[in-house]
Image (cartoon, rainbow, N blue to C red; front, top):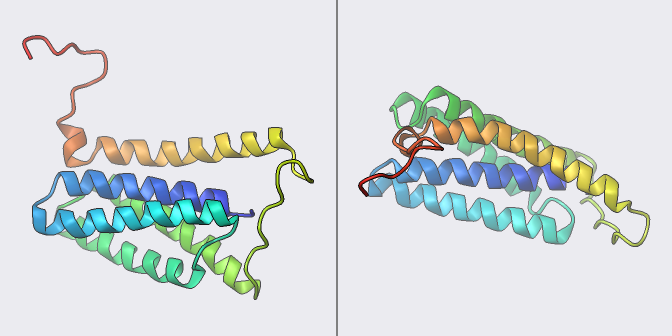
Length: 161
């Protein structure tokens, strides 16, 4: 499961950023972004279920296209610099893990069940650490997206609404 957990969590982070970008854009841009976000979520779930990187060649290709797409969205002003960095960084990290899986010349072997050879405590610690890193990258990108800029800050009341 080397890299599979990270790639899946990064895929969820990418999907969240794409959804926030779609929410702040017109319908013509929102629909393709939401389709791409749904594809990322589906890919992340399938990769976790398989215990290896699902379709590593396609993952590398999509990551390259995504970085170009993010650059285009940055140039047109659809996203800011921080969301661009988060989207590009997470996409390239997914591509790097997928490329490593391809470079090995074989697909990663499915992960052993927790009862055989895997320590549940270590797995949970790795899961939490990787989720914290993805959250640390994704949260500022979401806050600096168009919908995030108009969100009510935490702790303020909704008086009169």
